Image 1 (cartoon, rainbow, N blue to C red):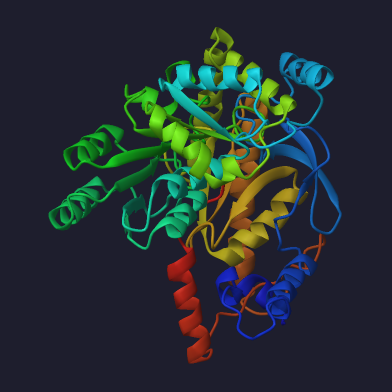
Image 2 (image 1 turned 60 degrees about the vertical axis):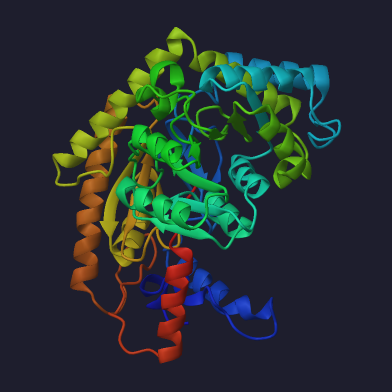
Length: 470
């Protein structure tokens, strides 16, 4: 493993190992990760040393701790440290203990979880809600629970990994359409129905796409599924609670609350907990999922602390103070985007809790991430397989509790650092930079390579480029 590989390669180069030793053949990937860690180019596996507040302390993969302005957390409305939320969790622990005691299908439920289901149903205008132990499990379980091998799933090519993997586990009849392209979706639906009038068709989209911060025209999706006798699933993991009237997300913002056949949500963003749900107006579908939705049936239910946390944050979301925080969150996003735009960087998508900062080049992005952390800006980094090769970006997650000064400082430092990282990579196409915070590798342009390796990377790109971070 050369020093250059730490910035030059991507996970695609190691995703198809060969050989009989399933464990041993992972060593090349591990060596690549180690090289990136040694060269200060591994921005993952960080550990928080504080609450996820606008100023936070974080430990990186080397064990070094950094303090800075925090744009990594999904606590969009700043409710994780809200005194009433903490008090609700403490009270639940004292009353009911810290463990649900079983899966939801047996004795893991409670009166509190039943009330939460009803409260979620009121928010999304669905009569029936099923709680899952994770948001990922809710998306995966909804698809694998309802779709069979003779059915079809049509997905946006950027749908979340839990939705992509759920589809792959349920059926081989999967078609993807280009991002937000409902015209292609319409043709796909028509072609399937022309051949088979009896199969089930599940159309999958999201309220807010977490890597692009954009949203579909949901009215058109609803029109298409009704025209062709299909079923629509909308994943509202990132927008529910953090946007829309009363926290109803993009379905509410587009005046379509209650119109989707299935709504999937996650409590791991605005609602300051783990867990997720599937909501529907079909009592039969809920009953079916309770037995056939694997992550619900075979995983322990949410704990009393998690239930209490979500219920209190949900009460907050639906209150006038929730409206005020959503307005503040929007202001933070708009300010961040305008400050970056003034420095030549246009964020992707719409103002929201998610603010993708495009960089493109993985080497540039890895150098920039290393520098940003040491300059007091904590941000998330996305590269393949989370996004496509050559589409690296920062995902700056805004919180209603960020101050204007913190936003302006972050925008200035991010823009200056990206410019400096581009210059470092451009000026040193080989060798290593001399950054005093650690040696950052600058890659030599890749040439040659075996036909087998090139073909393997191409197949990996085709297989793994779909799906995004939670």
